Image (cartoon, rainbow, N blue to C red; front, top):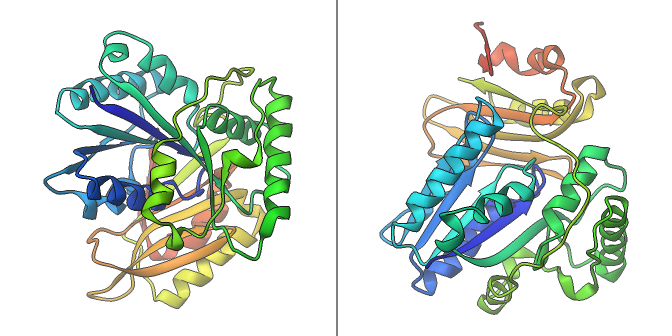
Length: 326
């Protein structure tokens, strides 16, 4: 019976980056590994970012949405059944950043999945620069994605932050748990704070053994229709300096809405492309060999016309249900 791990975290928290290194650790232990990218959106960029893990001992699969949560849930369940029968030792699930973990536990509690997997670890990725002020729905997702976590791993951690930063994050997490009537309270032992490029095999072993913690909390329905949105841009082409400038403008302009993440691939020349992974905490731009140009802008209460004004002149644009040619 394979183990199933869930790696949660809000939009842009760093789930995919963490999974790449966590999966490499698992593969070093000779684990037969399946990774399931489970996203409500119609396009899954994160799966592309994990392609270099694929090989004899690792497969990356995906479940995409775009046609409603119920249909997405059926596909999620069907995919988990097929992966359980494939012979993996462990299946790692990376859900959408607006995923409510109740869906994961509800599906695993149903036949036949309840007899096909053994619970592994639930890792919650939380940005070390977690804002103090969040919307009600985002605060709920923070509770949902952390309440049952065996371990909370801080992303973008810097050694200069120190214990005071951990205390502030703990206070925020526990305040949110109380607000949604959760019975979970976190202590310093629940937090893993270390720069990711300095993590050792012993660190990943600690994460892998963290398990899951039963917890309950008040339900607040949240999905992609609840103020969260994603805009897709295809065929985007510009110089790398212009890419950075436009990303910065997208985050800085309040008229765009609450932009949470800009991610994807842009062509910068006839034979060159870059990969973008940007949040308000920082912008990462690096060369890539991925052949297709696709960029996503994700956030709350996005103003499509304003964001289109930034990205449309250099793109063919396709957003869910809408197509505009330039």
